[in-house]
Amino acid sequence: MRKTVVMALALVAGLASGALGQGANTLKWTLGPEKRIWLEGTSTVRRFSCSTESFEAVPTPPPSLGTPLDKAVRSVDVTVPVKSLACGNGTMDEHMRKALKADANPEIRFELRTYEVGEKTAEGTAVKAEGTLTIAGTTRPVELDGVVTPTATGLRVQGQKQILMTEYGVKPPKLMLGTLKVGDAVTVHYDVVLEK
Image 1 (tube, rainbow, N blue to C red):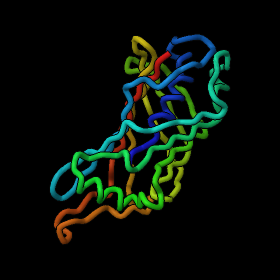
Image 2: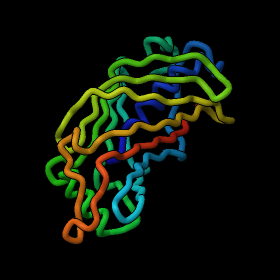
Image 3: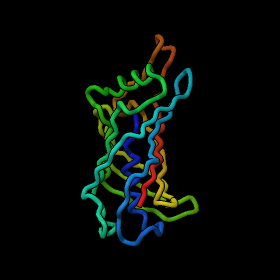
Image 4: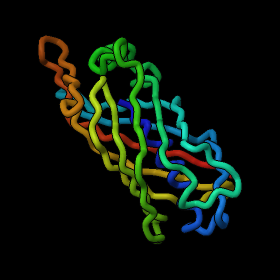
């Protein structure tokens, strides 16, 4: 379940740039080549990790030079193709896509609706985003926390969120007559760099 959360928080990170001292009252950021969403989970056999670098985000309205930070975007729609998630094992990928009902629901979507920029600390600036997350055709409200740090060329946003697959109508896969059972909880991580 790759989380499109990354790009949404990345755009919010752009809004946080004022708090980071990265440019006064304007927003003009692009996604850098360093972007990744990955999930980690457990099974009765071993831990696993699946990741993607393929996702996109569409802000409304599109950010433009000269827009005040607090009014830069009203919402952000982030989508990740389910088929872009890879676990390093073709059989596992197939079972994951089946569990996520990829044929009927080919995308995971996060829709950002509100955000808050927190205080700057030694670790970075906290960012909180609220919206909805749709997985396998089920949509639920979600709150995401991230940390924004300055880089040589822009901003980096990192964070994680634990979710339960069953809350989205996803049945954790079972294989080998039930000998291998995937745990319900997965932790979604995101790490993205925005460049000026």
